[in-house]
Image 1 (cartoon, rainbow, N blue to C red):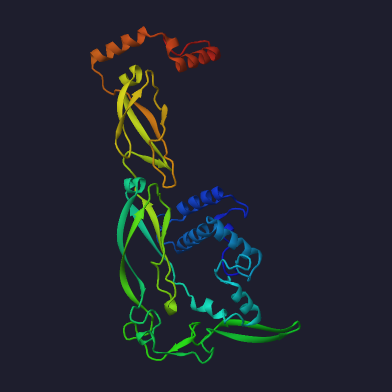
Image 2 (cartoon, rainbow, N blue to C red):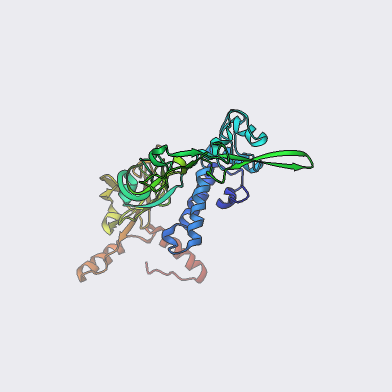
Amino acid sequence: MAEKKNYYEVLGVDKKASAAEIKSAYRKLAMKYHPDHNQGDAEAAEKFKQINEANETLSDEQKRAAYDYELEHPGMGGFGGFGGGFNGAGGFEDISDIFSSFFGGGFGGGGARSARSAVGEDIQREMTLSFMDAAKGCKKTFSYTRNEQCEACRGTGAKNGTEYNTCSKCQGKGVVQQVQNTMFGRTIRQSVCPDCGGSGRTIKEKCPDCKGKGFQRKETNVTVDIPSGVDTGSYMKKKGFGQAAPNGGTPGDLIIVFKVEPHKIFVRDRFDLKIDLPISFKTAVLGGVVKVPTIDDTFEFTVPEGTQNGQVFTIRGKGIKSARGGTGNLILRVLVEIPTKLSRSQRKDLESWDKDIELKQYEKMKRYSDNVEALYGEKPFDK
């Protein structure tokens, strides 16, 4: 834990922060340090990686509980009681590992198991989605290159997966013991065997296909079902599609970070959709029916008589559907189109029409006129 960043500090939240506060902090930081906004900035890229790692742990209740325990008990790992549990960096897989760590053996050499059960590195890739694909959900297939486990040797690096010897240094345990005398007595510590790297065996004859590496560089095709409602900075994980692990261990994961393109009409606010609705001066005054688009189709919306420029209407359930349930709203902001060119006759008609309407019908103008008259003793409008 000493080498790791404190995940709460990475997200800038308190240890007692709620799930909503963690989510909010993650979204803000992910947008700020996203690679697209910081091209060529290695420091921002590293920060973005740390933010994702922190969110992945703190947004999961079980992982967060294990992480909190590890913070409070450095070096003890995040195990849950004596029944097994968290097996992160320095964590114990089960009770045999606990005894093996303290007493250097017991329970069938469980200390070697952690060394052998290596996990491959994760791979992170960015995927660009159209606005509609992100809002409605879609299926995408793409290719990338990764280290895949060698089929010929099953990731062992040995010819046919069998041409290896038991490691003479650790006698196949994968770990070596170090005895140290202290003022409190003798202590026994275990560490990964330097000769075999924890596999418990050394290669006698290398696999000809992978040259003893245990993996081969290959192009991988993957298809992902993207749920509705993903946004820029959202990510999903494809387990087992990362880099191959040493000694035939578990491969890492593929982490797909999404970037959503803007739309010509819609502006997104989480699961709400915002749209500017232009209407004519006549429709604003007299009211009328106009067609309004959604992400699926159009619907008829009745503009009330006397609608003002900038007035906002909220239509519930016409926004983006969340994969977790619920649908956002469609928020309409009315923009009244004012004619810029009038003929002479149109101008006369408008002036005549305006004279027939008393000032008291213009509420804002009336208040403004009264305030000016109170201050300066004269009316600003010739009515």
